[in-house]
Image (cartoon, rainbow, N blue to C red; front, side):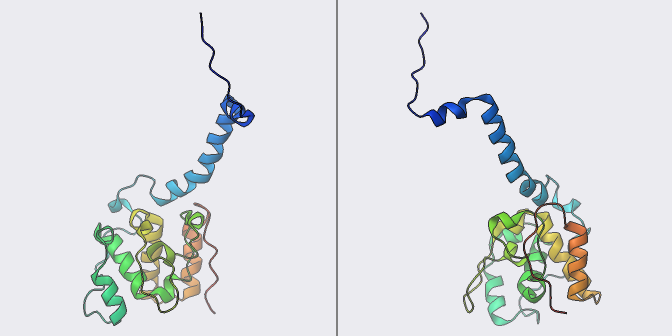
Length: 186
């Protein structure tokens, strides 16, 4: 004799057991989560990132690019910031030049994490006067890192904030939903 599985008193659960409903849920979740996963890494190794070898100069103790507060923050950076020279260079640039990075959107899908600009990929949003807290997200996201390093290189080459923003939009736009980041001042 075959035993019957007891029925639940919840008709909503019966609907979830139907294969078509389960498939629809899997597809919906795939479209919500996949853009972030694909844009942030795609399985590539750091050495294969856009931009070639690691940046030659990472601001450090005594560098004029850092003020005293930034230097104190940098001195206690977490291990994930140190995980690769390019990652460390991008975090250092975000710390030294938030006045640039804050005007750049991020196209890795981190808008779903309530990020407002590329800066939020490196540092958690804070209230004015509060000390900075590192955000781990950029340490595993090549789009975040490459956006910051592109800005660093372009600014060193004399590009304006508007030109940098245009290049970031052209290079990374469309990979995943971008942050809602205001345009830089003219």
